[in-house]
Length: 353
Image 1 (cartoon, helix red, strand yellow):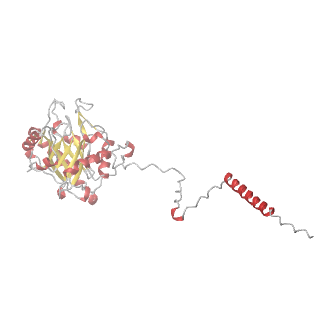
Image 2 (cartoon, rainbow, N blue to C red):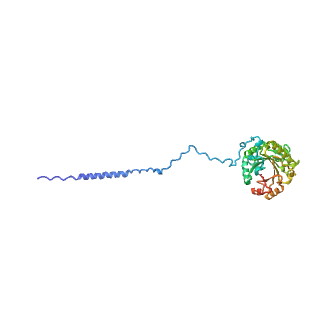
């Protein structure tokens, strides 16, 4: 009898399947313990950040300071020239703007009054000439009116009355010439007029004025006489109010007129200060002169009513162009541009002290 054939071995495929399952489990377990870091996407071109700015190789400079015309910084003495050019003569000798007459074109004059280097005698000397120029320009601006251009004036006291007799016994002294030269130079730089004010003490006005001939040869330099400080033989400045006669004024005006004609200079300011009628004897005899613009400048401090009253009594508009003084400290409720322009007779020249 033939033996039956053996049945096929089925255990092989089963073992293969078991091996595959074990391999899969090992792979899964390894992936859990070794996760892959996520990839960072690159930014889209449209979202790209702008490049960093290029930094300067040195720090930026400080912002510039304001110009001297904006800041009232007083320059030192060395910044103001004392070398004044020689006075002009002939056809080139004109006043600011090319005019020959002081009040031509209906000019209105505004001055700062005082002496050099101190504010004790007026606002002009509180600062240097260049700083003062900016201050007086600001003070003048509100007085402007249509058809009436402004002209700045520096009224500089060059001969000052004293309580003591001094070496000459005339109870006055002259300021330093270099100081005057600085104001001449400043006036020429800024198209201003310079007015030399004389307080002669016991000296004669003409004697004092002649000492300033060198300065008066400049076309923009004029002369002011202050009779309050013209003393008699036994009088002392500051104890009495002085006076002058028309004859002495006429001698000064004749000399100044001849000086202007001889050097072919334009018209010069010639100012007489006054706040009492007794300060100028025989005022009606004061003469007009060629090349001189005569101004009666009415001074005196007080209330508005007091100043208007003084002006009404003293003013002589038929004989002079009229001037008027304003005091920063002594006036009570100081008059402004509107009140000054309302004065009658009309004022063409004001000064601040």
